[in-house]
Image (tube, rainbow, N blue to C red; front, side, top):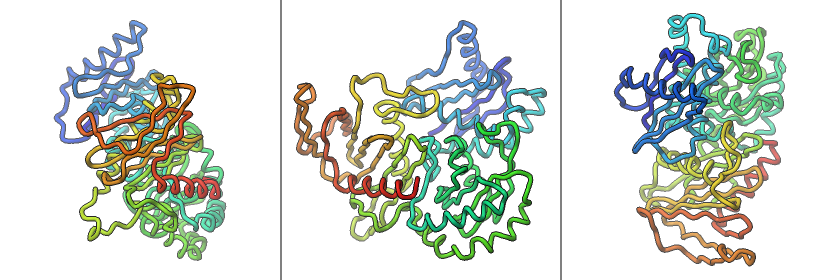
Length: 449
């Protein structure tokens, strides 16, 4: 989705930088000034202008520390405003991660700041190109993980290596997703976990890195060092540490600590892009799913849950299209039907008198289903040929919810059907989905994910 992002000083509205996604013409300065002017006028009248919607676009404003104003103009995807706020928050926190909070909120020389802030452009552009990311952490505010039987073995190797780095904070990344991490690593806030994984994935590929980082919540003013070492293609070990040890001295120890784990690392790497063990049962009609733990801020996603045989199934939906649909479905459901844990959003949707536990959408090309239970939220994408929903719902206390549905042959609203299932009901959707939820939750529990 094409978008504009503008950063201005909160006091005088001086433009600091602008970034765009997509083939867009630069907006003229009077338009940018008008967008900032209407926000400043509202603020002077003691009114908080958060967002506005036009026929085909949405404008969102966000002020950080009374110093910087971020304005985003994007197509309106009918999602809750909390997702736009989440993106703007990640943009600002990524600037803190790279540049430091003190220099962001106390700008002494505007022209110098404009030059120095360019070091943040790569992270900002990565966030704006969120539709192209292979992970979902930028929209869920939960770090992506990969589940493997070898994780418990690799945990011991990681702990020993991080101790040698004179640190307590380390993780093992497999294709941008956390396989294992130290206990201290999980004490970082969800935003820090997301951005640390993202900065490694967004950085140029190399055998080792020494990246200065300001942890946005833990240490926004004092920099730390993020050391990364590539163990094999797509697999990197990371450690957050102080001035010691040096990148070169620790690199000499990498082989000694990780040589014995080579076969385990290969086994975990082979799980990508499935991201969970191959011996887990899954319905063949599932094209992808996203499982989020809103309490631990960890998630598991895949858009290639099985190896597809195109000779039998014919042309299937591409992985990029699957990822796009799952993202859109998540953004539509969370904040509208399911509660959002994103900072600055309401905890519960206000338009329903009951708690929504399940919802689904069907179209000519795919079907989507979402369910929440306790801290877990599950979003699944199905083949269009999958049998229609089979729900048996009965509630003797409220006749408004008493109905029984056996197959739904009808499609409405431009070949789109949306249904919301209230709490207190029994719903049976897909045995394959129930199986995968069951097995994944067992693995999450056993691996302390």
